[in-house]
Image (cartoon, rainbow, N blue to C red; front, side):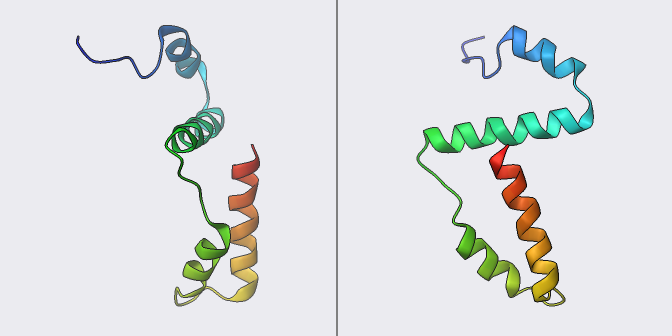
Length: 75
């Protein structure tokens, strides 16, 4: 109604046709764009430090988690 459309009609139609994997990628990219517009970024070293404090996550598992996070940030 008086609200600004967040996603236009063409994008909405593309989203409806996406599978789960494509939708996940789209949402992450869209979220990154929104955060970038707001001037917010992710501090990877700080994130890694916080994750390392979680009981049960050793250095090897932490490395695997960070690789996955960095992979999603690159796309």
